[in-house]
Length: 500
Ligand code: NAD
Image 1 (tube, rainbow, N blue to C red):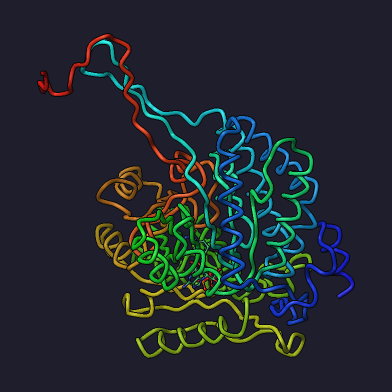
Image 2: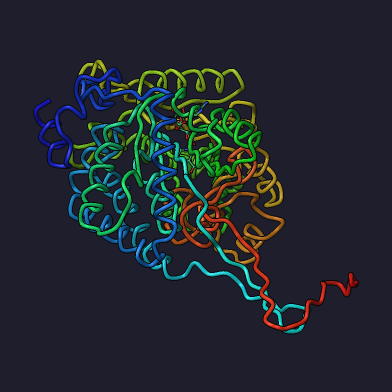
């Protein structure tokens, strides 16, 4: 407890910020109580939205490159506090040290990206059909951006949204996962340090309100929130999407994945094994881009599955903050129970299961570690088609590449996908219109670990949203088409006459 107190203080949090509240925070590492934070009410959410709206009215007229300067300062705070924030991610979300650090690095990367972008929020100039007229489009600030985030990327997801939203001239209200409120409070404290070094930012530009679905719902229902960017399960997206649509708000949904890797006969199997192991079992299978299925050509199926099974059994499970650990804990008992249910269903549906048992129960009786599971499936049955947020890898066999691609696409989700192949025709087919139907399709790398420079997101039940790089910034702005008449006549478009 003293350790966590020192850590939270070093990140700028006063003791009162993490004690005395009603939302208890437990570490998935050992079940220890890390703190108890204030849970916001729906009324507090509505009041925060009102403050955010006032802040946005002032922020929208600050020149975008100047807004970028605030994000640059925030990136500096993140660089300075990277190790400590990463450690908090490990303690609260159970990520191994390098992944916790990688998460904070993603925040730094998106800040750098957003700073450059703040000078490039460009629209088109379009040829007008009328003489003496100029037509152009502008991208203008949107309003209040509501951010709902999941436990498994407790801070990076917020940064992907907030860094872009802020340079685009918006204010932000954040409802983090109820499982990871401390990392959110610490991130907010770092942001406030950046604000203190910045001249001319309105108060309440970014706020965080902790709590469960109810406080998230108050945000979703509020017409003053122009964009709701929500990351989490498809179940959550099904609740949020229609509500925002009903009030004609904008929604950016980043939901569940069920990602597959195809391994063709020409694949470099060394690379494939490493890519599959990290993809399937890294972060204990708790990434939206986790590899959940591997679809292997029949000629190499038995050999590759045997190799994966041997390597799987050697992955070091343990406390994520101990050196050498590759697999940390599941977030809670509910996650472990869901894993056991999926494995039982897989057995019923003809699967042959290796691993998947509870691990380290004697050492950590109040935590939920599991050995990574590999399940040889006879077909893509119902359980394989659902996302179970745990380290379970289903193996499937294929004969033709067309069959493999059809299997890969035949799930409700459409986030990430990959092929391991040294055959140019196979690789190009996989990324073509007749190939993967996912938002991310890779060749000779796994399904997880995206860079922030590309747009991130997926199709179908993954929700269709795109965040992070490329032109994802446009989701945080409104487009205005402007036609300026600098002539002394008033010609109407399409040659229409209306004269007295
Ligand atoms: P979750 O759906 O349980 O919760 C996510 C967030 O939504 C939390 O903040 C929660 O409080 C909030 N929430 C839940 N119901 C709500 C409602 N009705 N209204 C408003 N807010 C509500 O998800 P989780 O267990 O925290 O995270 C795991 C899931 O997130 C997985 O399905 C994973 O694939 C997905 N995920 C997707 C991405 C992506 O970018 N596509 C990234 C990370 C995680």
